[in-house]
Amino acid sequence: MRKLIPPRNIFLSILHAPSSGIRIPRRFQSTSPPIVTTKALPGLPSAHLFRDVPSLRQFRNSLAHSTADAPKRTVGLVPTMGALHAGHLSLIRLAAANVSDVFVSIYVNPTQFGVTEDLSSYPRTWDSDIAQLASLDAELAASKALGRITAIFAPTTQVMYPTLPPTSEIDGHGSFVTVTPLATKLEGKSRPVFFRGVATVCMKLFNIVQPDSVYFGQKDVQQTVVLRRMIQDFHLPIAFRIGPTMRESDGLAMSSRNVYLGKRRRTAALALSEALELGEMFFANGLQSREDIQLSAMTYLEEKRKAQEALAPGKRALFKIDYISLADPDSLEEIDEVDPARGAVLSGAIIMQPLEEQSQNEELGMGGDTGPVRLIDNIILPAQK
Ligand SMILES: Nc1ncnc2c1ncn2[C@@H]1O[C@H](COP(=O)(O)OP(=O)(O)OP(=O)(O)O)[C@@H](O)[C@H]1O
Ligand SMILES: CC(C)(CO)[C@@H](O)C(=O)[O-]
Ligand code: BAL
Figure 1 (tube, rainbow, N blue to C red):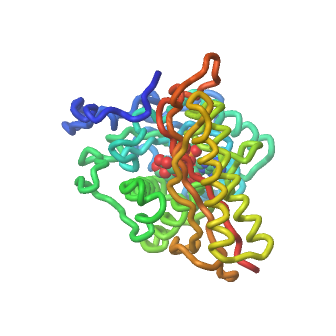
Figure 2: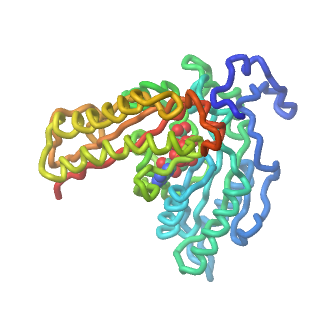
Figure 3: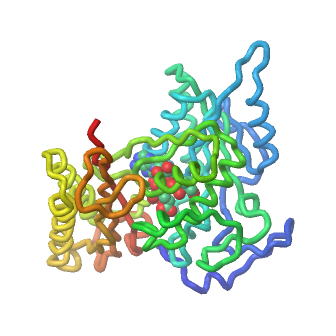
């Protein structure tokens, strides 16, 4: 069985990276994909795999100039951490509707994981990722979409952090992008280095790829707010696009981390999307106060939590509630009343606890439901037109 939280002493295991002389802790080393510079991928006839910056830049530059028989091409970047699912694919489809060349990055960025978080066990599913991209690219070709997947960027950590080993320590050294106070709210309260890591790696990806547009999912709403602010504040000439949250048929937001949920935890986890839907329903019926929206959602979620607590250990899936927030869509400040001209973001986070007792033949998730799993979700309460 895999443990989700790496033991602290993993930091004692330091490996030597011979080509640079930089010592990179094992937890920051990439295990997959194969080390190559650029090569064609099976099932992806128009795509190249890049693992370093110069080769990708060369390819990117070749797209920047029109020739007598070909117009200038446009590049859209979809950053991911792999373990692809329909949410990621929807962003690639959105990109392909807007640009000629879709670049997909697959990189599990160490600096956005806190020292006790699930970096070492984060799902890495390279073969399945490539198979899904191949089938999507065939779909794009058949549908005559504007764009195709033409580059997959899967850098190593040495490529992404060329001078200093990356750090997840709050006071660690390195070149970082910080976006405050946005990054300190909500997710940032529980994951203090998270948005520093996200903003830093996205700045690197944007500098390397130089995309015309970038595509992010609504599911990670605070990430979109932080990155949009970063693009604005640093005058990056990039269009920022957000794709809607893709959900399972029962409403659970798709997430790479859902693979850790066996049937019992997955069923209990629905409480989060249901609570947000309840708040949304009140808003849709004309209610605008925090009490009517945030408090109703919170009360519903708390009742569901207590209902699990009341069950026997072999039957229940305990979870902790981190927050239910009703916030302004740009500042993420908590609000008492939704301003109809601005709308609001209703968001939440819960932490599914490990199962205490498992029954025989129980359907378990990856890792045997032995580690905590953080789940987030949100619903946009739209501004009135
Ligand atoms: N359900 C979804 N619908 C739409 N976009 C999504 C969904 N889930 C993730 N994305 C987007 O895909 C991009 C890459 O996300 P990432 O690789 O971290 O996957 P993830 O499912 O969010 O993983 P995690 O479980 O770590 O949160 C992000 O822009 C993210 O918002
Ligand atoms: C944007 C991102 C790829 C940066 O590592 C990651 O935070 C994600 O997948 O949402
Ligand atoms: N989708 C955000 C990546 C993370 O939770 O680390």
